[in-house]
Image (tube, rainbow, N blue to C red; front, side):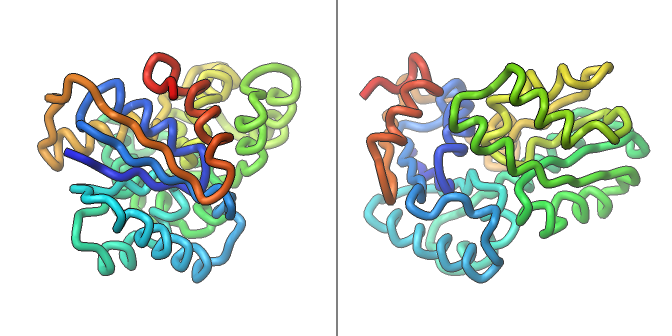
Length: 251
């Protein structure tokens, strides 16, 4: 199978890493809209327009499936993308919700959703969790984490100060949904901030489980060919891929 993975920038590479580890596909076509990142600060209509324009890029490839690795796109544009596409499109939010249920988190425990401003404002995670009977959900926008990850500041004093800024008034969460694909790269730091380590809901791991269980996709590929494209500074994105996807991406 050949699949596409779409993100507003580099964050979706954390999803790609999980796909590569499980060897689910023969080829992955990754497209980052780096010329217009971040999407998390844009309005709904702009997000939908950018997402539909990304579909035009994937028309250059005969893909079997598209993953919208961007939580903001999954929150606002999934319906419109599916209507405009001839192949199936999977979003990370629905996979993340299922992963919460799979981890058997008590429905009265505190679940913290951290994401960009647009994803939090969409209330997609909060509403879908409430529809499934979860009663104690807090969503906060943590957009400052995104540039820290891209600058390589994934631990240390600056990240600790930002975490304190966001989390200082929070109660102890039982689980944290990483509602942005940049956040898995600082997952350990976020988890260790709290006295009792919460369960972490990771978009990449969740989407792999979703594809295996819901779409019945098996890990039958011996090697996965990864091709990376971008709307701007593709070499910069490929250099990030070399760093994040060590042992999987070298060219």
